Image 1 (cartoon, rainbow, N blue to C red):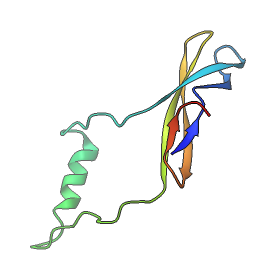
Image 2: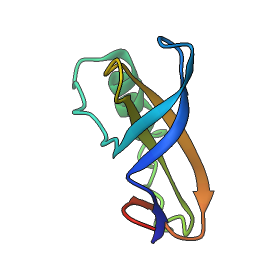
Image 3: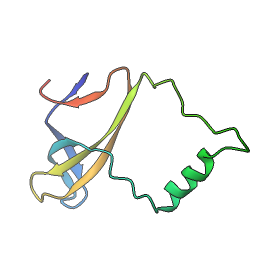
Length: 94
């Protein structure tokens, strides 16, 4: 796991200056079965004729992640994307 510090100094769009931000890892939200994207996915998964489109067997080795940065001054938050690394990013002391 790639360690990322609990607090980082980042630019706050609301304060318009660099302030301390707390980091928290974002999780995937709950899927809505009637959303357009989910309906499209179900349609595509059916495949053609008797052949069903299969799921991928191979897992990706490199992981990335979205982190929610919360300003300690104004408590507004925004997302930051950490791109793919050899190990999955994790919030913790460095």
